[in-house]
Amino acid sequence: MATTKARDDGHAPAVRGGGMARAFYRFAYRAGRPRWDAEGPHPALVSLVGARTPGRALDLGCGTGADASFLAAQGWQVVGVDFAPEAINEARARQRPGTPAPTYVVGDVTQLRSLGVEGPFELVIDVGCYHGIAAGRRDAYATEVAAVTCAGADLFIAGIAHPPATWRLLGARGLDPSDVIRRFGSHFDLVGQEEMQGVGRHARFVLLHLVRRADQDGGPDAGG
Ligand SMILES: C[S@@+](CC[C@H](N)C(=O)[O-])C[C@H]1O[C@@H](n2cnc3c(N)ncnc32)[C@H](O)[C@@H]1O
Image (cartoon, rainbow, N blue to C red; front, side, top):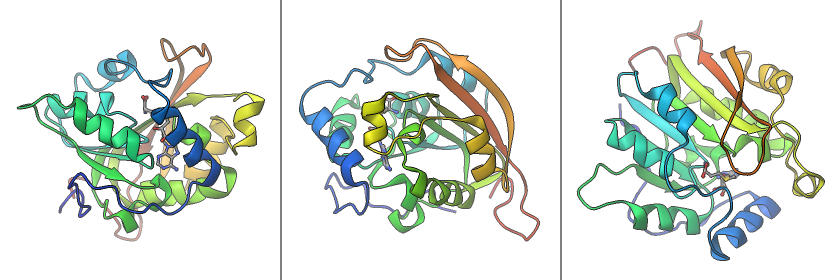
């Protein structure tokens, strides 16, 4: 099955949803290089996926594509989704000619299937996206991720446990394992939790590892 039916023709489609948070991220990318925007992939990701057999991977809130293009270079078939067209344009611009490129999709991660992102994916990563998703959109995020992953898929979510007050004004609720279990627990098991070092200026980044269970009702299965 195709990983995505979304078009990756370099044009930014109209994006539904996101409100203030999207406006904030678009402004941040237009204003220059945001402080979270690293040169290369996150070291934690490099060690996490290093020994895995490449398959289909999804980077949610991929920003300028450092992690997505690292995975593509490792042989993964990668889709990166971000609702800031400025970030996706920069990701495409940074892609080195002749290297395997991810498919980039401009859109909201809480609307994956309506963006044409289908999977099934064996690996999903989210560095700094879910922690900023408003409470009212988190169940939609979990539903969409469950719909595009196969049994046994790994989902890594990294974020700040307690976002600053200014973020909370934009709807950010942080990354809390009990919130994640409540929202993802019908399809995923939480199998790991650790502090993630070397991300931005924030010492308290948490990295959660979840694994997709098989559906009882004949939903997406391993290997898709
Ligand atoms: C803190 S940045 C991290 C970017 C990238 N993962 C990295 O580590 O450099 C969060 C990213 O998530 C994107 N984002 C936040 N909420 C989103 C949503 N609902 N749908 C799509 N992208 C979103 C933002 O545009 C931004 O690029």
